[in-house]
Length: 129
Image (cartoon, rainbow, N blue to C red; front, side, top):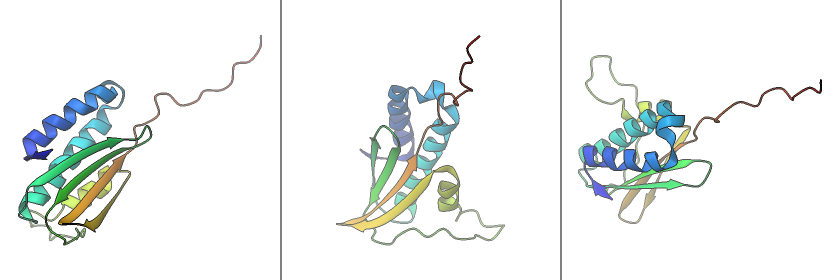
């Protein structure tokens, strides 16, 4: 999907609904939506490019990939405390279970991966009465 920030968030939210995460993992949903916002914004602001968003669920991890037309890979930086920007990839690093970027034909892909929390931690085995 080629998109702006609001369209990307709305589209992502709809797909997360199909996974049932809004009920089972609302914190993960918010982390994914904020990451989508950051990655799409970075494509527009830093790459001066449209953003192409792809979501892939492999039964263990949701891969959120944003492609843009710049070959320059993102680098987390330590912004000045008064700076208005420069924290996007630090935020993605804090929110995602992992992230990576790699150059590809006509630009780069930045992918953040999210694993939903287990539905319920395993309890102690039942004891026979």
